[in-house]
Image (cartoon, rainbow, N blue to C red; front, side, top):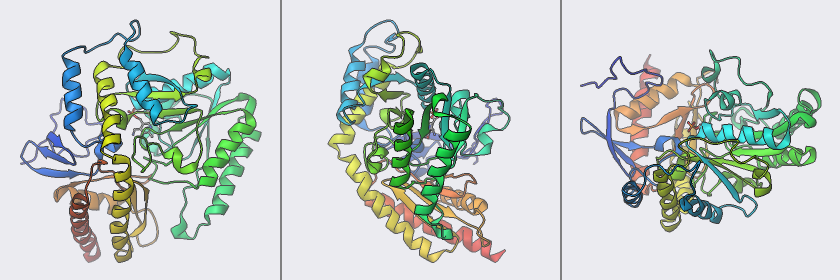
Length: 428
Ligand code: PMP
């Protein structure tokens, strides 16, 4: 039996219309037909503590009996402080002031507004392949795929796009050379189209998410930081997808030894409830005139309760370490398939943010192959998603609670799916 959306629902992203999801438990999802799926998508980095972690469910239940809406735009609620203190424990000292909202895009909008307001400068530089959300401001900084932007022009003015060193070592590309090229292009941008006196900030995902699960070199991120310092430009890291342990560190910026001026967080912060925020130094945040920015729902008490408990669970269940360990285990399992199938050209990742890139025989992006493999996995009970500019990368983002046995099971399904779909293709 095929479950379908009714035609009363706008099908803006009808990827899994044959799975009508009912409930979730840790790394598993169950549909209304009683089928069990292994979820290696985690809501793209949302359910880092697993689906419906009992401690988080309990915290939400308790909070729901006390207060559903805190009116935090007009009333003080000490939960905001409590959450800020919990976050401060996992952040560098200089990132010590918090502003909360509901979605990732909304937090990116906050960052755009803060940098413009604080510096009085209009321009923002973003990087090719980045994804920062779909509200008009955030979308203007998003270049991961043309489908997100087409039909929505004109977007926000004052945005300039600099190249990202999306390394293609498998095509013989020299990482060092590419890093230098991209940094030179960035400097050139500052000398040509967006002068430092007009550039408020640069925004980057330390590891590209929607853009293909690509990690630039440490030298690149350090180079971006240095250029920002040299020209008095603020640096924003969008860690909406990479945050809260996804890459084997609480935040991905740890891998690069670089601290941003503004950190944007969402997704994994509250294990599934809507919460996002920006974090910056108090001196910078204080440039915002009180009351000049805000919204009705952020931060919501249920989301705050979930977030406070999420941080405890991440810490007490050692999930950041598990992300590191299980990430390496998953990578080595995928490497074996890379050696077996020429269609898999690259397997890469940090922690449990792992990508597996496909190509066609002629080296072009393996969009159809990745889609076929994804679908075959789904039919065998493993939920995976694609990413990358051509949807040529399959991403592996299980909850950070994932165990070796779950990964073994997922890899067995993946192996069988590869055999079925690539075998079928080779017979054509
Ligand atoms: N930035 C990044 C890096 C993201 O991955 C996403 C969501 N995929 C967003 C921003 C937008 O977040 P939201 O969908 O909550 O608006």
